[in-house]
Image 1 (cartoon, rainbow, N blue to C red):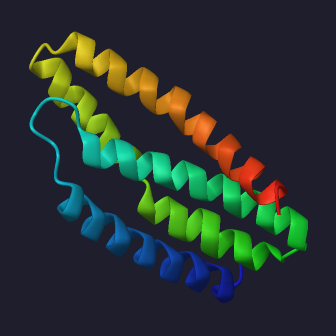
Image 2: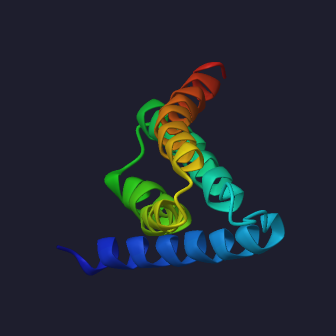
Length: 124
């Protein structure tokens, strides 16, 4: 493993985490019902992953860009751990319908957003 790859993931992850923090404070719609901030950030992250995948493929960019943009930035920006914690919180509050909508919607719309990102880049 090269130090360059570690640094690229580190810098990308830091930037993604900072942006996630700022956006979550701006959205701040978690009213102990549906966790909108995490959901919207994860959906945007899925869209970005789709865009980055297609751009990397189309432009023939090196693996360095993949590590920086996908592993680093999108990995730091999206948050499976917060998603999991919010599901557990909803379960402890016995909000089964919201929990189901959040979990199912996150998976369904996350894949849809990634496909949309690929599609958008293919249009140009």
